[in-house]
Length: 111
Length: 234
Image 1 (cartoon, rainbow over the protein chains, first blue to last red):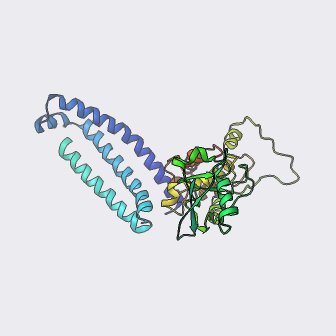
Image 2: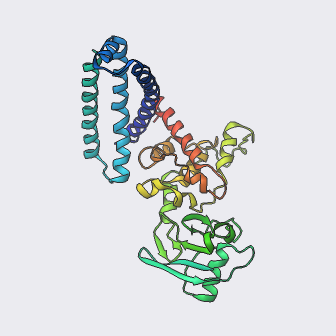
Image 3: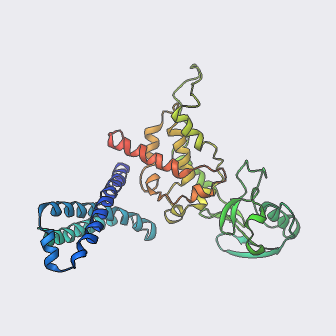
């Protein structure tokens, strides 16, 4: 992997971290607010339907998809001494899995 | 007091010595006493004895320190002392490490000055209060003792990582307005073996006997590399 790509990954991880910081705060505040009236499936679904929340959680999933595999790349290198094309390919697949699983949940709850 | 000293190279064990205590005794005094009085085969390295040369750094009770500037009173927990060679470097014998890898990494990080001017040009005038010069001043006093390198966990986990001292050196050159080698240097310090490997644990800054901050230098390099990548210069 070229030094430019590695530097770009670092930028992407920092940018996604900034997005995640906002997303996590909004998510936690929403949870604390939402559980005041009890926690039922009907109550959750009634609150979550709408394009605003759908867009918000789609961004959340996208940020996770970018952020997590880049962090795992460092862990693979430092703890497992696993590096190179095979590692990058595995992490790309893991990123695809995160995007699929995350968006499946978003579509299920918010769409 | 009981002093445990590493004997051997990569394989070896600690050997215990009884050393008399004295006021204002340094760890280097202890090691020197052992070598001169108890066991002349003990190998260790020192030169100036006053914190200028950076050659006497060792692990003292698990922490990298200049032994010449470390008073026993301040580090001997329970009147016990353990002295070992610097971490993260190959051991030649006893307390002596092979520093080649450490300095080779300075070269890999393009730690050499590349001037713009010829001998026909006048001296470069760098205002001492200019932003760049102030930043250079903060990192320029490194004497290459490798204490930061031994303190760094990332060096341990990722042996290709050039380490805090080399990156600190690169940063002082990146901010040197007389230098013309910056794009090459930024390429050299990017990526998994360069500044992007640093996790900002701050161990280097915590342990630097000169109170420099390689962590800040590395953060500066990350910013410069990011800027150059976003502007398409790299």
